[in-house]
Image 1 (cartoon, rainbow, N blue to C red):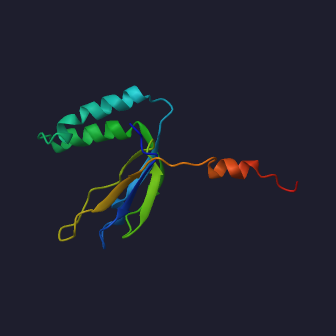
Image 2 (image 1 turned 90 degrees about the vertical axis):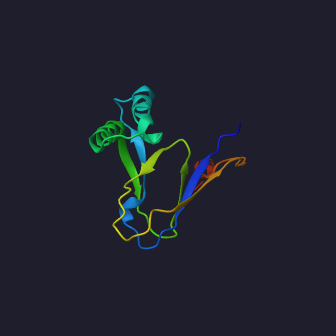
Amino acid sequence: EVQPELAGLIYLTPDIERDTGTSLFNMKKDKTLEDWDKTIGARKPLNKGDTVSEEENEEKWEKHRSCFIEKVRFENIYNRLIMYDTREFHGVNSYYIPEGKDDRLTLVFFIEGIRANKWPLQRVREVSIGG
């Protein structure tokens, strides 16, 4: 199976809270994929739609987010396109929608099978300056 190289999304809700965008994260140096996997497992009841108290939900999210440091934040701006490597840790910043406003709507897509002899950064590094 081919793994997509890029993920992307377009924000499609006009007049929405800008903080409902997306962030990319680095895993903290003292954390491992095993730590992250445990926090994902702890959230499975919520993901399945089981009833979870607000306090329990907050506790599980805090534990999960404690594995990461935010490195890039994209605000939710109508018609904005963002793209990132599918191996990046990513997540929504907030699901808060004020009463009377439309829900967060995005168009998500993936790109796979990119073919190139060399990536742009490799080509730039090969160019000698002044020489």
